[in-house]
Image (cartoon, rainbow, N blue to C red; front, side, top):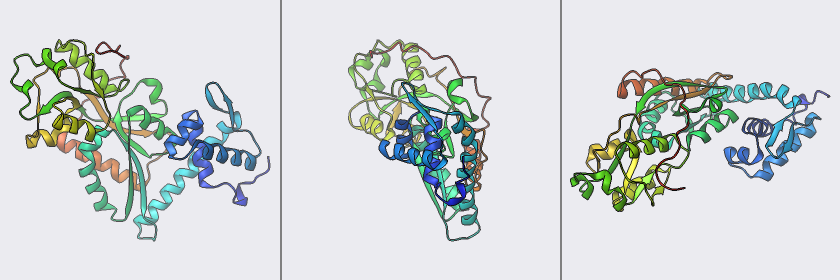
Length: 328
């Protein structure tokens, strides 16, 4: 293969698409993580293969599998993308013309709690910065992180196979609670668990870690199986349902803390023991954080320590629990 890197035809978009397809295992997932169309990803990969003169992926039933040449190329592509991002960040920090850019991922429930204080600390250190926050389910955040679409994530500890190539640093533990609007009839009930089916119930999406915690909470309080419920990941939508529709919202405690403190929402007296989930920083093990990402990492550690105290050692990923409540 001729050395064609120096002729300027390999662009950042080529490397970004290549890494996304290689690390996510398919064109569709890569397109979703990069917020572009599948044809655009396929065209970009074809261009890169033509420039390099090698086949990078074998397409089959199980997605796009990197070839030997792709595996050899991958660490160097990773290094190029990271170096470029870090260089832009350094220029911004030293007062250059470019603004620093940081792309991070957060669980929607975590973003509602941490983002305001975190952005305040970050912009105090980096006045000229563009921050892009991707909010998604934990599994999607981990995929985006592996693909290089985001530099770090604030999420939950996942199964061992999903954590390959990633490091998890626990920040705090968070229980799942059931909340309702102030004045909700269930607040006056002697047995609220038995009456849940009379009201809309808002649950985290099936397959998420906090949905497993919700299943555990429902089982522990003796609630009857739910024939009807609403699955939603969006905090704003779930909050509106709780405030306007008499819904019972199963939510991580700190995502509802502002409304609980203000008295807009109230917590139902259901047992939350055993529903704690560790929340923490997730970073790639094969990359060093950029200067602006390092600022964010230090800030989130300080904020978590100040608000929640020292985190307990995280647990090993648990075996998946079978969904026992509700119908699928």
